[in-house]
Length: 235
Ligand SMILES: [Fe+2]
Image (tube, rainbow, N blue to C red; front, side, top):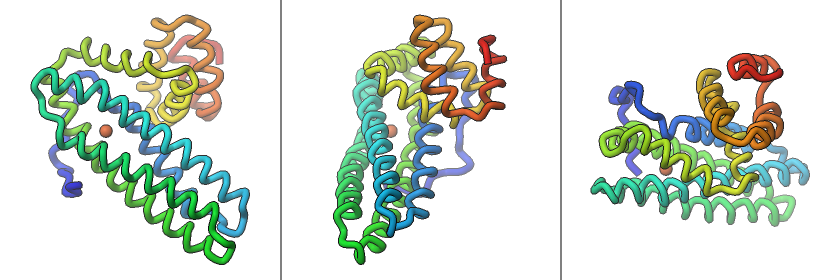
């Protein structure tokens, strides 16, 4: 992957629909948090290792699902309008190989003899750091090059339709997992916009379940109160 990303060529949204913003913020936050946990895990404590590896697997599931949603909905839609996607397609293929490698390294940590655990944890930590570096560069490309291509080829209404297709293709538990990842990573105005749209568009029992099981547990009391006020719901 090309790591020479441009720091001075970051296009403004200019009011256009930010298809990648929320979910990428969520993946960055969860990935950086997990990287820190992998760095700090006590390799002599099995329960600590089990807990961090369970988090790693949940993260890899989410990341694999995200890549698949982008392939099937965003890349496909771009190709249908004549926009080539081979560069980002290859980056997604690299990700899939990385997911398998990270799973194998996690199994190595789990099955290592006690005196080899320290080395296995270090290898997993360094591999995950390299994956995150790649993924940060990849998401940067998507938000600075692919997003403008989407804005040129589609209206905002069409882009919202793409997002709706992704959201409605997921089982409720998977949607909840994405919401738990995205909500705390977004700023207050973005949270209110996402959940305000859901409040207006989704059945009340679905909206309430998202609030109770994904939003409330992932925010501080202060952040939740701020959101409740913006949404005009009970704190
Ligand atoms: Fe992607």
